[in-house]
Image (cartoon, rainbow, N blue to C red; front, top):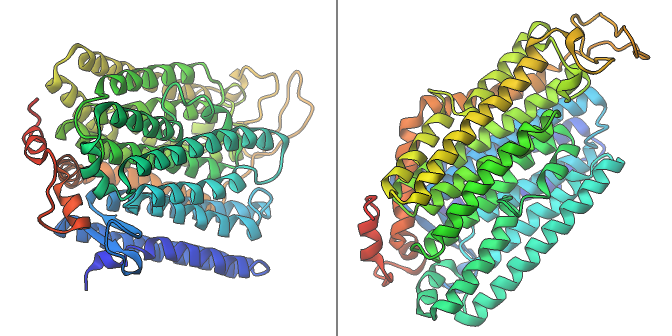
Length: 539
C-alpha cells in the first residue's frame, strides 16, 4: 500500500477528535485523553508520510476518485511532510501544556467544552493547508484554522482579548477576501485552480496578467505571514491570548502563510520577477521587527516582534530563488516553529511563577527556578543564532545564499540578517539579565511580584498585597522541556534535516516531480530545463 494514500487522515483524524471531544463535554478526563491520543496518532501517521516522502519523493492523492485537475488533490512531498511533522509535534506539546494549565487552574482560561474541539479543528486546518494541491482547498484550510483561531483568541472573554480579537478577525477577513478574489481572478484567467495545472497554464498568460495575479496572492499571503508592512496587527493580537494559544499561534499560523508564499512562488511563478521587492520586504521585516522588540518591556510583546522579525529570514531565503537559499528557508521554518513556540510556553511559565511577564516587575528567576532559567536560556540562544544551535546553522545557509547571489541588495540582506541576529541576542540578553539574573529588589516597579523565595512576601514602598509565588505544574514544565529538547534535536540532526531541506528545495525549483505526481508522468513542464540549470546555485 502507498503510505501517501493515508494523507487525508492527517486532516480527518483531528476533525474526528474534535467531534468526539465535543460529545465528551461533561467528561473532562476522557476528553483530554481523546484529544491527546488522536493528535499523537496523527503525528505518528505524519512521521510515516515524511519517511515515504524521504524515500519515494512526491506523491499525490485524489479525493473521491476525480481525475486531476478536477476535484481535490492532496500532495505529499518533502516540504509538506516536514511541515506536517513539525507542526503536529509542536501542537501536541502545546496541547499537553494547555491540559496541565487547565487542570491546575480549573480550566478558567481554556474551558474544557470549548478548547479541545476548537484546538483540534485548528490542527486540521493547518494540516489541510500543508497538503492542499489546489488554491481553493488551500483557502478552505486557511478558513478552517482561522475560524478556530477566532474562538481560541477570545477564550475567557476579557476586555483586552475581545479588543485584540476584533482586530485579528478584521485583518484575517480582509486577507481571506483578497485571497478569494485572487482565486476568482486566477480561475477566470486559466479555468483551473489546481496548482500543478496552474504551473503550466499561468505561463501561457501575458506578463501583465501574471504579475497582477502574482501580486494579489503575495499580498494575501503576506498579511497571513505578517511580513512588513502587513504585520501591524500581530504584536497587539497575540500577547493577549492565553499562553498556550499564543504559543501555537506564534509557532504555526504565520508559517502557514510563509508555506503558501513558498509554494506559489516556486510552483506557480518561477523565476525572479518579483525577487527585488521580496528582498526589500525581507530586509524591512527583519530590521523593523527587531527594533520594535528592543523597545518592549513585556516579554510576550517582545517575542511577538521577534516573531515578525524572523519571518524576514524566511522571505530572505525565498527571494534568493536558488537551491541554497530555499533550502535554508525550509530549514529555518522548521527551526523557528519549534523555537518560537518554546519561548512563548516558557513565558507562560514565567508569568505563572512570577505573576507577570513584564521585565520591570521580575527578578531573581535564575535562583528561584533554575529549571525555568534553563528552559528560557536554550531556545533564547537558539533564536539569537548562537553557535552551534540550529538558528545559527539556518542563518549561515541564508548568508551563503546571499553571498552567492552577489548583488548589492543581496549583500544588504546579508548585513541586515547579521545585525538582526545580534539585536535579537541583545533583546534576549536584556530579558535574561533583568528577569533572571538581577535581584528582585532591583526591579523598577515599586512592588515587584517575583520574590527571592516561595514563602517570601512583597514588602517595601507601594506594596499593598502579599503574594506567594506559585509552583509550576509538572505537566506544563514537562511539555515545555520536551519542546526545548526537540529544538536541540534540530541541532543534533541538522545534517539529515539540511539534506531533506536541500532535496525539497531542488524539487520545488525543478517543479517536475510535483507536476508529474499530480498530472501524470510525461507531462510537459514549461521552463524545466532552465530551472534545473539554476538549481545548482549558479545564476
